[in-house]
Length: 154
Image 1 (cartoon, rainbow, N blue to C red):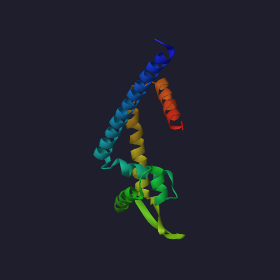
Image 2: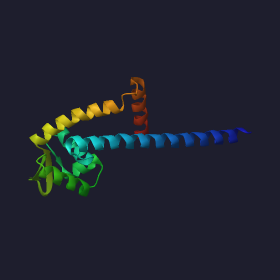
Image 3: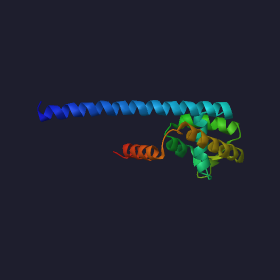
Image 4: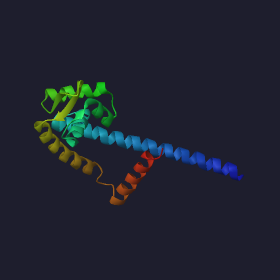
């Protein structure tokens, strides 16, 4: 077998291995996400999208414009609007018209939302810790490094 053929076989093997890795990452992500969705629903009557919006607002005490919130969450304005409407109706967030642009809204977390989010983030940390309990510290560090490498490779 010549060198070129050997390289092609090696490249094909690595391509298949990388595909296997991706599929396993996807399955693991879906497993963890499903577990989190169920726990949020069962313990807080909360959806993952509402949790994500509250988390973003919790991190920005001065609030965010709807467009900033959409960009931060990487979803459309339409998707965010429905979630924000529900959070406002539950008293967890508030919407204010911006004086500089009457068509734009600033969304802020309320005190009630902040209290709930403080509780949920503490539980969320425990849930993640429990789901990843069998992963060693060295493997966690290695996995974080790999994920960063993938994301920053452009």
